Length: 181
Image 1: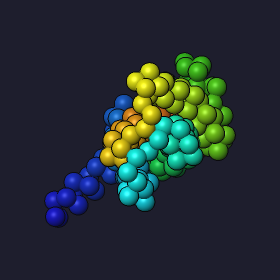
Image 2: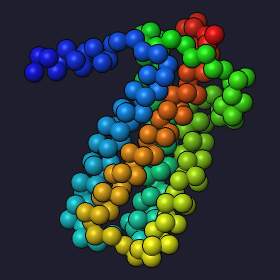
Image 3: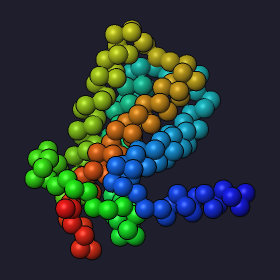
Image 4: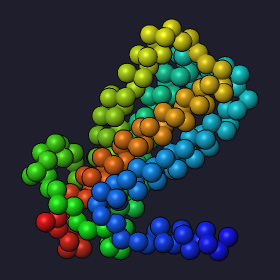
């Protein structure tokens, strides 16, 4: 047990390259999004069947899950990234918004970026995902299959959104004086 705490302390304090840090963020999102999704499924565990349409259906849940994961990743991810930056966990990223103009499309304010990420990723992922269900003529899923789908979907969305948000935060001016080279 003591070695577990030593390993966790090392994981939470060792210095990383920016690329390692982006991977660390993506893998961390697997754990966090997986746990939150499992917790959101727990109250529904007695449900036998989840229809495709309806207020508690697959389509509505997929839209809501995508928006919430994307938005909350920005809010909480930004806090953790800035904390780690201040603690010196990684060197400043050599990329700047000038090198990657797409990064300039997102607002600096966390809440504005959260809404924009939520909307953007919902429009990017949800229609394609729901389209696959429609093409497969899925009218609904038994709860176990729905839970597996939701868990895998939430983890996949988080693994895409988290590094994009981290990249955005790492290319911004650092509040305590470090700037990208």
